[in-house]
Image (tube, rainbow, N blue to C red; front, side, top):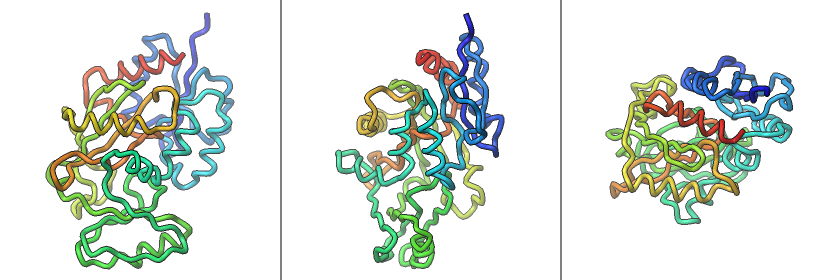
Length: 277
């Protein structure tokens, strides 16, 4: 019997996958699965694979329509198209907040709408972005109008959030789950600090998730528009002003899974992939 084939979708900047994702190749081989990286817009025959897993497709923010068109043509995709379409625009945060999930307060400004910079310390970024791209932090009283208008004039919706000062000391907690089961957590050091010139250089370390953080993750994942558990999900939380965790982002498109930060994480992810086959 032929071994199942799995494509791990990536982009042409990382044709062999991000190093963390490569950790799953060995465990998948041990489970009898032939897995290989494939660039998502390479014109590959996706019907030749039993499953396509979205991984380091990190250029999608520059061509979201093309990315979703590609996803619509993949016969068997994880995570599925409807989830990717929902998650690749951060306006989903408004839905989570409306459902009662504790989310960092967020104001959305669409092109053509007036922009009024807040007086408090805040962050401005487009709703379609990743890896802190086009994201800026502004001090209390600092005018963010010009950068925001530049994004709006380019046809991009802008989101404005109060900066969560506690992140400077504690960082963010990323909670990872596979097929709906919590796997592990990791600490991401602060990204929007003057000393960090490249967000990709942020320090990552192991962290144990608290019960309160796990509850926020559970509530957020319950809002994802999917009838089935997601192959992978990452929920990023930070301490709010009262010390309780609030959600920064729900990453179910192409998040780094921080497999290197927890013993057995790559094996758990491989087992989840195998179970879908």
